[in-house]
Length: 117
Image (cartoon, rainbow, N blue to C red; front, side, top):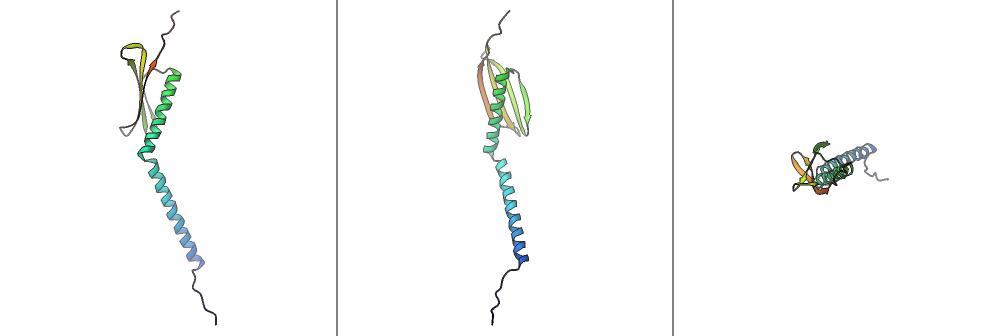
């Protein structure tokens, strides 16, 4: 006589595989969303945007105040004379998200006088 072995049917194995794929997909989605809202990620993105705006400001000589939105991040550029000296400007840039400062940049820049004709 042959012994009958108990085994799972193909339908049961397929259902288990589908459930396993759904659980892994849900877990990966949750991990991805947590990574986007991590404070270090926000600060890194804010610092990157601040550095880019500072480089653009210096390269284009855009010596004026401006507020810009980049997605959920607000970039605020403030340009003011440094200690009353006419050829020194203080450039300050802040990156804010939900009224919280996540990155800050500050530099004193020498602006040579315009040649007079």
